[in-house]
Length: 269
Image (cartoon, rainbow, N blue to C red; front, top):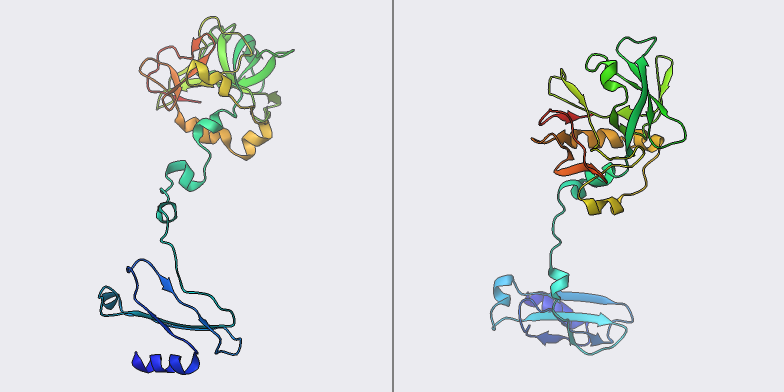
């Protein structure tokens, strides 16, 4: 330590020997001239144990082309040392929350105005569904095993309306009838809007006031490319009261909550 100090004295015009006010408050000293305009700095710091003792000092030798008085750096502020709270869940992974994704789905009240068996597929029905547009939408549904035509005809339904159109055995399907089903997929029931719901009304999740928070629905291409439906669907289910929910948030129209006939704790798709 002393040998290094002597070297510093030899190469520097002035040396300031300073006693630190506290271990956490750095003390800096600068000297004038003596280094030919070339900035150099040599620091000698006492060990952490010695720094806590009044018998030891921190020796700073600094040679610069400019001159200034010694100064004490201010202690760090609370905001500087405060640690950020770790992100959790979807934020930590950079994922969009499921509620926001669900808001991009165009789920509407519909009414089946006509239904018939698909001429090329025994497991499919073809429906014309009023979803509040100028013309009914054509939708193909794999419900032959679960519902009769009489149950489907004139029924009020819930339609996922912004899926990308699909060609199903020669007929283009423009949406999907949403249903509840048990774990074994042996029992399937249509989701039903409450009485008084109007075809074409967009469905939302949450409280009555949450309707005003709905975002514009995504396009069919966006729903497919970003896998929006695939991300939301696992979070849909029915409650013990047969109400359709997203997590704990009920699916609703202006007339009330969407439900199925009798399936409790069922998946929704």
